[in-house]
Length: 85
Length: 279
Image (tube, rainbow over all chains, first blue to last red; front, side, top):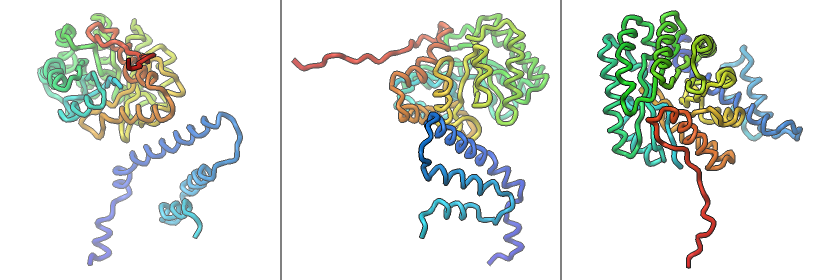
């Protein structure tokens, strides 16, 4: 079994994480932005009862906007998108 | 449906891509000269490359019934090397008379440096002097706004007809100014670093279909020629008709590229047969 020092050695450095995944994440953020724009255009100014899914989207974005948080954003988002148990 | 892929780097792709493109309806591609992934050291290397895309690549595409056209030029990245660039520019006019060369491209800015600007201006002037179409690359990512603005500034001071200039790789933040100034614009569909198929459809819905070209670029980097077909599929799924799709993905390339008489593919229109009763 690897020691904690060996595991730490294998972990990516902050810069490496950004080097590898920044452009992917940028691309995915642009897709979210475009999807929200598309949704707004499709409503064409008509105010209707909000679909729960769009609320989930905005709530998720608010969760992601918290800089100081526990390191389990993906898990929290998946719970947020899950039906109540 | 008939499709034209107006920006395609065939030398970086496999022959299987041509075969699959042909099966999906692609009838023609146009290949701009670009950066080969490393900086070339000799003008002769460019000349051989121009020979490859103007003489050999059309034969490879023809195996699958695809017409292949191309552009010649010094790409923005290698334009930083002034001496090399001017030596290449001297030889470029020899290619303008080749039967599949449509014009000068892709040229423009990479880091928007003074050297790049000098070579960009020289190539635009060369195109004007030889009555060639112009295809302009705009920078990737964080340099795109500045590079696009500088491109427009340079063109504004030159005697160029905007209708004969295609400014490529525009996205939501750079589309308005070139369109407003009368240029053609291109959306380049890349998996990560440029425009996605869905965002391209959004822009088609927002800005209409005039003077807009959609392409996959498809080079040696992470790219896929079939992002163009993905875009067409999303366009159709949103309710746009086959004829509207043909207008954007076949007829618009015909309209722009057809300003060069060598590009002899005409716009097409679907006709419904009124009566097909069996007698």
